[in-house]
Amino acid sequence: MGPDNRPLDLDWIEDFVALAESGSFSRAAEARRIAQPAFSRHIRSLEDWAGVDLVDRGAHPVALTEAGRKFLPLVRDVLAGLEAARIKARLAQGGAEASLRFAVTHALSITFFPRWLGALETGLRPGPIQTLADHSRGCEDLMMQRRVQFVLGYGHAGVPGRLDAGRYPVVTLGEDVLLPVTAPGGEGEPLHGLGGGRPVAVLDYSDASGLGRILRARMREIFGDAPHERSVGAVTIVFTAHNALLLRSMALAGRGVAWLPTSLIAGELASGALVRAGDERWEVPVEIRLYRQNAEMAPTAEDLWRAAGGTRVPAHERPA
Image 1 (tube, rainbow, N blue to C red):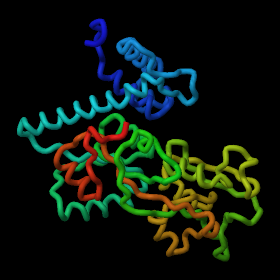
Image 2: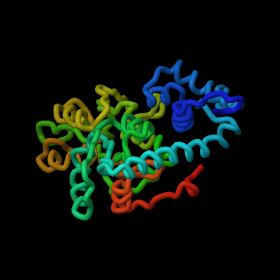
Image 3: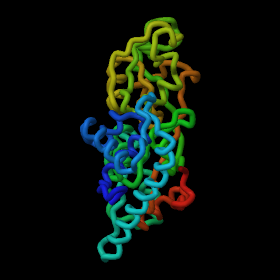
């Protein structure tokens, strides 16, 4: 019970944290998988319970009030404590160790993840493993809903994502490079080339893609929000998809230029099925990152995190 004996719903707290991390009522409602009107009512109910305004609705993106900023780290600790209590209760009951639950972006689920997990398993006994492959936003949603313990995805130091904004612990496991590639022409030349002054047909990532977010920030010459931001002539987005696997198929079909992870197209580059569409200045380096829940996890999950090179963040030391 809260002030004046008003009841408190735990969902309201989780909705508030999602809103703080996304800065948008619509995106937070989508992440929490509820309708936006209901989500807004939850936030208002939490404010009624607290007796203060927690959200500045006049700010764009949505911002927290001073009271909301003080409130946020405290309720994060509450949620982390409840998650830890649930894990310890399950283990105390004598049941099997909780399975490891990963959300992995599509490309990494077939290139990096199997090899990396196999190497770790030689020194661990992880037990059952559940893996969900999704686009970047879907993986972030699963983490924010506490449905997975780990998220494996691409990142860039200069382009923070939602999990970075939410201060989820992270370790960098490796590196990759996004290469602009295209099918070859009759003489082996790029069918669609960059930097030649010709119109460029581009295969783009959707807004739900983390690679799309990185490319739009680092390659404004191609992906600028307005034509005057581009410096390579006419650019036409001819196809858009959530994941690199589909963009690879379209590039192989000769539909345009796609920026694809080198690890995904090593075979196609070696065989000549895909060729570079531009020189090194068009490359975008990216990191392969593993994020974890910012709460105590089952011992098996903690062991894997340490084996991956991560260090646990005690609750009292987590960033506010």
